[in-house]
Image (cartoon, rainbow, N blue to C red; front, side, top):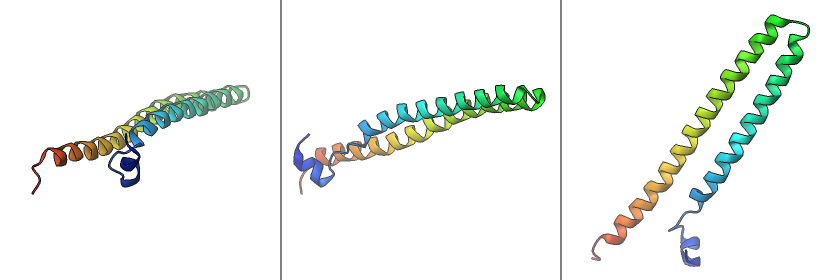
Length: 96
């Protein structure tokens, strides 16, 4: 990648950045999930029914959170790859 590409936005760096953000997001979702697990175990000590419900909600929340985060990241990567493909098509067209 040339410096001029960086200045003119011909090449985007978002593709590399989104992969890092994807893994960071997964770590954050899992940490919040572990916090919910700990909270549900604490709740079970004085209200077992509510604690069990909280545990189920934590598991479902983690699953949906991971799925939603994956979809968001894939959509963003699709937009970035569309831009790159359009640039390739532009470069293949004959100069007028």
